[in-house]
Image 1 (cartoon, rainbow, N blue to C red):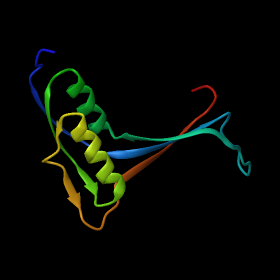
Image 2: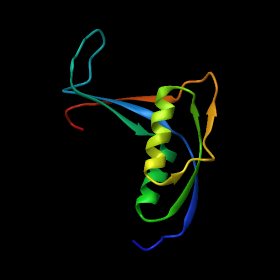
Image 3: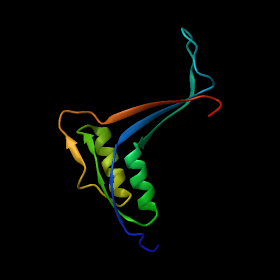
Length: 106
């Protein structure tokens, strides 16, 4: 693949906890999910990965916590050939998470 240039991405990193539901609950109602997954996300991380897949050299400026989620995300970004040397690890903090609920309509 031809090199698409170099790019620095500044943005967020988080873990997306995604739960698929048939429908969203009404007040007081309990519903069960039919599929659960954890995926790495964050607008900045998603942009860095997409740009890297286009062949660009990517450096990513962001922060994670010093937890296992942050370590896993940093390892995956490095596996995706993203320069993570500008990613700061904040001692004593947790990496961000997003709770995403998807109903039957998508």
